[in-house]
Length: 301
Image (cartoon, rainbow, N blue to C red; front, side, top):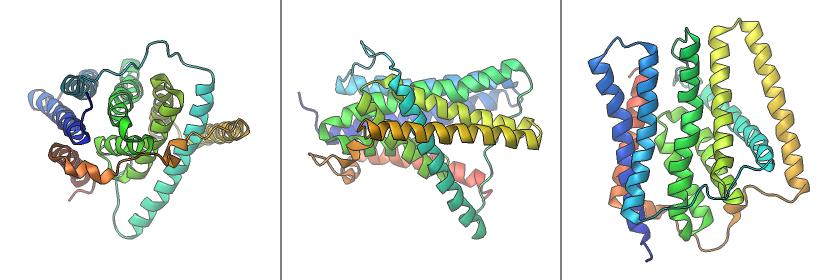
């Protein structure tokens, strides 16, 4: 049975509402009950919250649409996925540089966002739990939700449409408005790589590497001597640039265009179809409310 696009967007919007409710309420309930909770328990609560906030919408969408995509059967990681990840890290780095330039421009206008920081990490167990929360869990559950469910559910209406719409969902799920450009760009590339490989492990790998890189860089900046931190960051950056350029050359030599779905001239719906779905509008609005709350906190309004 063919499912109307409006209905699919309604269901995705319901999933977003579930995502926001779990993501916002569970930590608040915990902090209201244990305002001085220790770091390990907090990380466990945040990890459970992130898992539930993605898996609950998946279960909701699959049940409402009777939609159960096969994501793992017979699809093993391939060595070439490492090349895609190297290119992806270069792509993400370029987006981050562009975003940093825009933020510098906003600072000159008096709009200053606080830098990303980690909570204090004092023990090895805290570091491991923090790393799992920041790098491992998002790479798995967010990919299952956004690429595994949302993108696949929208795919009958065009590859380009599915990539862009799922990237938009991926972006509004993240509450930091100052990261809109790199997050949306990451969502687009991850969607394209998933369609190219037909393998959810390939996007999980790239998502994990990017999050692990960001976590380690923040940790080094906060805990290591300034000169040593800059030296390490410079070494990693050169590794990303050299690896990314080599990967781009390999892709060109093998006539592989990872962004080809964006050039899809076939039947593609328009993103404006999203606002024709009342529940999707409500879902987007609930995410934007969370973004606004984070923006209010960041700018100390």
